[in-house]
Image 1: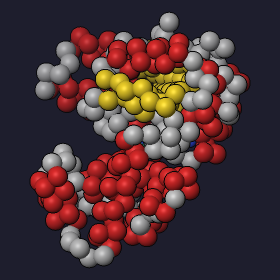
Image 2: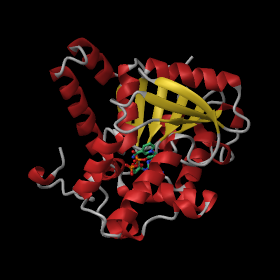
Image 3: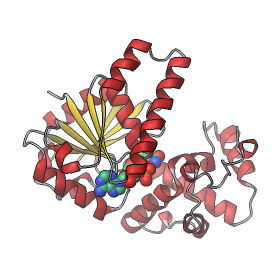
Image 4: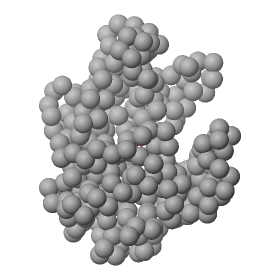
Length: 289
Ligand SMILES: NC(=O)c1ccc[n+]([C@@H]2O[C@H](COP(=O)([O-])OP(=O)(O)OC[C@H]3O[C@@H](n4cnc5c(N)ncnc54)[C@H](O)[C@@H]3O)[C@@H](O)[C@H]2O)c1
């Protein structure tokens, strides 16, 4: 029985997972090593509640209840001690994930399930950093979590059926549809979206058109809800680059990150979260509608 969920990482994804978890009726502890990130997550979550209330998507009673379900913490070892499920949402860098899984293995109860929100990586490899591969799985949410309907559930080599069913029920209680697939780098969704996003950067680098023209062509010509640059800025260009580096290593040249994307990340242009990516979010009139 899952009552208490610990979400590790309070960035773009962790805060969204915490929100849908609290609305789904779970007690949620959000953990981050960075105090400022925790504060930002708190105000971002408040703003999702405010917009949900204003648009009639959530009742005042539900919002009050969900807010009472949310706790913020900087000590992962402490938070893990009474968790039923831990969902990891730290950066897509294997050494950071390893450190998190070693800490939770040492502190979480033996019956606790472990999930990773990795976009591309192997849940089997991530499970190897702890000692309960049958209870470890990838639970891949999408951005923005409170709006996107899917959770892609990815079995590792030793993940058992009880874990798959438990995670599927948790995702459904969070209001999500699910697909259950077997592991492969990039799963279904990131394998496609990384390729499209990277190709758009190659086009920009080649001078094919402006970001606005390329985004418009993809949206109106191919019926995508967002252009690849709008999506990249939402995802975070650093996260997109980390995904591509991993896929390049595992799947070869077709995922080689575009040099222009690497340059944007070096310049600190990470997308919406840093105020500037392909587009400039500090000047509201320049933000594509
Ligand atoms: N951004 C997206 O659109 C998206 C979509 C689906 C999946 N993902 C995946 O979700 C994961 C998180 O991505 P994100 O975009 O939220 O990243 P992010 O950079 O926005 O947030 C990561 C957070 O983790 C924190 N952190 C770092 N080390 C930590 C540690 N040891 N313990 C606790 N917290 C720690 C950081 O301080 C930061 O607040 C990645 O694996 C990414 O691939 C991202």
